[in-house]
Image (tube, rainbow, N blue to C red; front, side, top):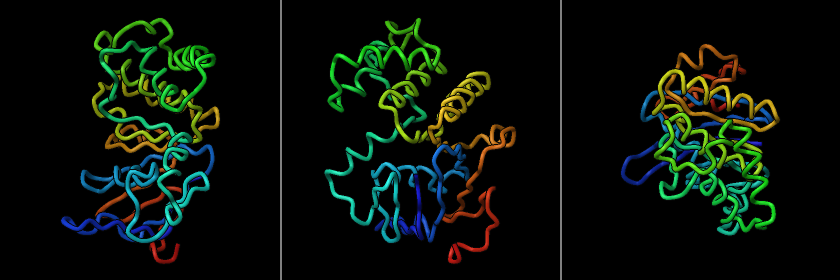
Length: 229
């Protein structure tokens, strides 16, 4: 599903961001990505959806390899992924329904299927009654549910969530996490970057911890040094 093999990322101005990082996420897994601010959790997510490429090593996602990636492959890869951001990134002048529909329209989905697919995911995230509302009429937790519905509507094989509860209170955080767990239970893999260690501790999900550009902890594997992986 997702495989990092001895990945190194170096930027001209700021130097090494990731150094010799290797891990694999299997189909249907739920994985937390943790670490302090500046640990490059977002860089890892960007590499998965091909917004960044490694300086060396290989990132392989859904059988698409960074080593052979062509520009035309990026859109095809991203259609297999659902991406959720901390700041929702909703179109404020469009209804909930239109925000979710937009994710299908840009992929060229037939108009005949858009309505039913949007209705399905809004029901799945518990927002069918808010389909005609604008984002500004919703709570933060509801806005994030719209963002999750938008990520789901293309039936992705994996959802990448970058601090999806960072702007939410504790109750909304629990709701969003439970929703992501429910989605994961249907077979969709989830990788969630978070600073919320209490949320991590209360769950039994696999945890990957990044610190100073290296993978320092994998709750499912003994750490024997990146070079031996």
